[in-house]
Image 1: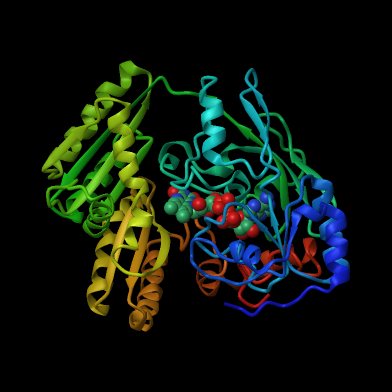
Image 2: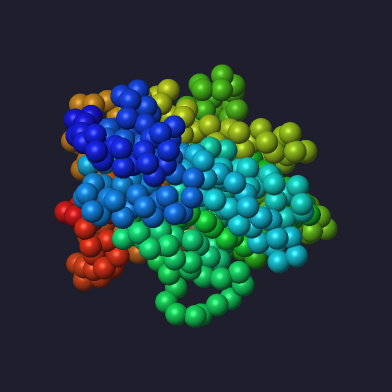
Length: 462
Ligand SMILES: Cc1cc2nc3c(=O)[nH]c(=O)nc-3n(C[C@H](O)[C@H](O)[C@H](O)COP(=O)(O)OP(=O)(O)OC[C@H]3O[C@@H](n4cnc5c(N)ncnc54)[C@H](O)[C@@H]3O)c2cc1C
């Protein structure tokens, strides 16, 4: 843990005057709570503020420029790349009080929300009105929309519906220098000027603090059908995925789970799910009921003809929920195998999924490592988890480099949805190239000349 730096009492007083004494924390127990994310990287902030308005955020950022301290926005801290970890201390901005769904505009199919709204809560509210917000990170029951915007979160349904950026129409953003701006509009199309909405989405809390979000909604699909299929090994499962993706049915989710992940979930949930199978695929389709029943049957057939030993179609919502509970349990379950993991979320063109899985298996074998793969294989996004005993770290770091080299050679990307943060910063130059990286740095410097907003993220040297 990085040692705590200290804010002066006059700075603390100024911050208290902005957010109110009840919403500024400096106690050691409180600081620990805001010091880490899902990477388990820890660094203490000097203080934590819980603003209630964009105006308070703006006043804090003006103060940060004047007194030169880091400000780190934080949602629920479920990030997988260290984005909300205050690596240089400073002030954590937490949005627990900015957690209201401000409006659900049914005729125009839009919602306006504050950044601290939990993603699953928005989904439940809009679904109760016959509407649908597709982005569904597996962490949806506890992550926030502010965090989703900052990471451009994907999720299980991205294979059909795309990622967070595809649903953001406009934002209210406080720039690092304190100005409050509105980007985009409440329309389905707009080309008025540069697309600042897209610049902020995925900027990992380094270019602005999001204080209001306008999202697009869809009609809720009439019917959803789900299946689970078990295969003797990962190769058949990957082939089934490639065949499905090359066909005419676009599943709304197509997930792959390897034997290590199945084993971890079985241990975690204390259930025999697979009867010893070597890999599992979950497929889901949605749409009009007349279409989905035939579509799920076709996907089942493609799984069987690719070598599935057992295919089971969920008969009702309970059975669907059971399948998804299993999938969502993988991340926590992996800690039953080893105390530590390096978690990468590589993405390759969908047809290269079998190749990258074979490559990862080969790298694991060569370095004597246990590597567990699962994830959104339908869109080519695989979560590669190197399960570690501490003494295996040097081999694991070599393996990461080799995996990234293979991904880039296949024209993939080192991060599909978790962002660069601190964990992937050393590798971004491999993918972006020096000139593109310099263009990104120039944007950062233009918007944040004093480098006060989430410093130390994305760019290794800033
Ligand atoms: C079990 C598990 C499953 C997951 N599954 C998925 C998945 O399927 N798909 C996926 O994409 N991700 C997944 N994630 C990763 C994570 O949940 C997402 O990245 C999520 O978007 C982070 O949201 P958060 O509220 O926890 O943000 P945090 O982790 O708190 O912060 C993430 C980033 O957002 C910035 N930020 C937060 N709020 C704001 C704001 N208001 N303005 C500006 N910047 C802000 C922070 O500075 C940080 O850089 C998973 C994580 C876990 C633990």
